[in-house]
Image 1 (cartoon, rainbow, N blue to C red):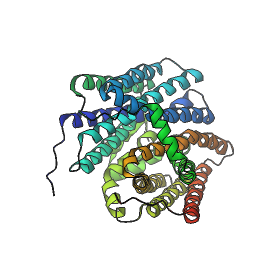
Image 2: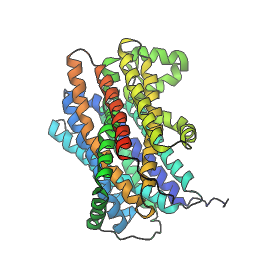
Image 3: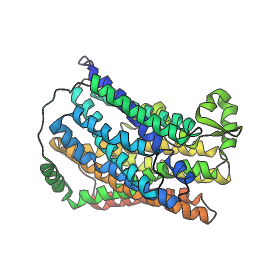
Image 4: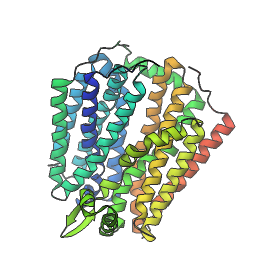
Length: 427
């Protein structure tokens, strides 16, 4: 076995930037539903903003990677900060629906510009001896930022939402300084592919109707309920569960000191901050390696479908948490996280391996389209939750998402049985 190549300094700089960006992004995104409702807007309004925010976050990377190839990672990183910083600060001043929607659209644009740049840096500065470890570290840093952002912002919003936005802006400002001073453009071979050529190549791949149908199925039946989970869970916990009772239950196990990290005092009553627990980052940090090793020798597509069913079970348990026991919310999140850890990496691996080696990146670009479809449509379910709330049955949103996911797994299974699996390439 070859000795592992040491990571260059820019690798660590890039990963530090990734932690800060995910801290700011998820710090705002996870608690945003609570913020909007406190301003008096409906869950339908929230769903509209979530959809446009996520749409930009996952559509723009199709373009920004090409610009980074032409102008350099460092310059495009700075462009993303110039979009990030003023739009985050605008949240302090704008309270109208149109103003907030445009501001979040700007943040989604900035996130979309940023998204492929750090993973692109990691890819450029790693080789055959260290790429697995390199991307493992990168994935861990994503989840570190995504976990600590909601925890810190949950504490701050108990004082003032302005502190949340100022802290997120400060994180972007720090990213700017780190990039300016320490980020050195990594040497690489420039492919020089134009946007026109990129879309021509993508159109060629998507002209395969079987593959195009598969991408649409993934978008509608996997990525849609996946993003709906993150869209609805914070407000689901904050609105429908007794967060003071959750605090008491957790503190009886972990102690008041540890539990206070994810909680805030509300007029002398300690309550769990919904955004601090309503994501999967902290579970992924602990269990992803175990899950990956457990499923690495199993076929990708059956593993993916099994993961969807585990995620569906998580939705069902989250539904039970309202009427049976609030503490079930933690088990529901845990199950969904396991489903995510099984499904998300395996479907991305599957798409990579059904592509000819020279077109692996292009196929992964089409996977971005599947994510875009699901993310853009996912806000619909936030509005649906509002309808269930009005009917006095808010837990039905979770049962609906479970049914959606189970039907999706069945639809993808039938599609593969009827039309056949895609052939995985040997190299």
